[in-house]
Image 1 (cartoon, rainbow over the protein chains, first blue to last red):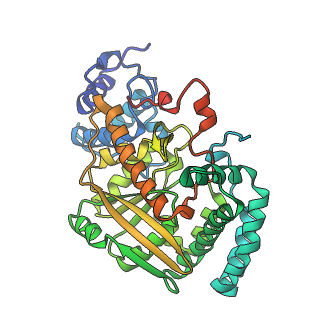
Image 2: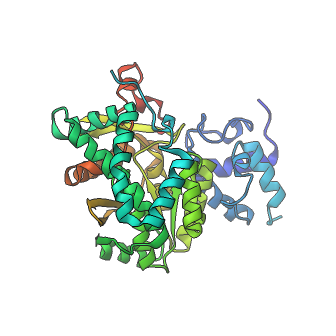
Image 3: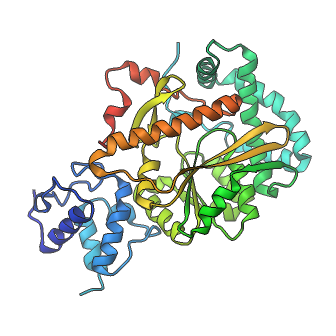
Length: 90
Length: 316
């Protein structure tokens, strides 16, 4: 399993906190594992809570009409890469 | 002997040519003419569609407590054909020529007035298209319907040709749960109504079995997780077909908001699904021939194997 980058770790922590995943250690999330329907116990519907937390933290909206949404939400690695590309708080 | 059928494996009834033919004949010949065609059409599908016939027999036996004769089954097939034909008229001309009674409108309007958006949860009972009538009466409140466009390409094409604005307002479930929930939340933030049918699961969607007409039936959990994510008022919505040109559109408050604690998802979902199934059952009693799930709804074949549907649910 790959080591998390700083950005991935920050996002993993945000997800764990905003979704109250008490039993999950953010450092132990596999960046390439499916975000939904996998070991995290997340459903794709949880994308809304993730999107809300992301917009608060990183200052940009994940929108429903983005053509690459299925790719973006596929894994922690993809979501983190998308955020690093678009974040406006830095 | 019944073969197990998932509704997704069923071909779309008729296909493009049949729908084009029906549409052309209906819109040029009028509804009265179209309705005459329903008799041979009903008989044709009744004779040709074995799986649907078995599903109808299974359903009606549970409703009436004894195996049905041919007549009730034909009535159910005919009601389905009649409402399918009416969809064309409702889409093309709105409620003109129909008598649509609306029950629970004040309840709905009060919640629309709160401005947070509204989630309307329906079923494959009667005609969801009757909801368009309401939409025409309240053009200020946008209506977005969650549908899987890939499942019924011919019907989708027809819909988009007849009513492009309606087609554009569809939230396509084929694009995945993340798309659906984000689009629904964006709609609610504009005080819109979001509508979906909650009695059939998507291909990989988690289901849980709850009692329905006396036997556990698997129902999808997605709609309720969506309600939990949106935190908007939820109303049940039924467009019952009463025969002739009459429909009754019913809005029934279900919850001011749905809350599903993550660590108690299983019990919370079961409680919601049980209440939903009880309301479906109520409307089955009110309008038994309005039931338009022509597949093995109880998934008996699957239940007889070792794994009941609730066990492949990741939502505990």
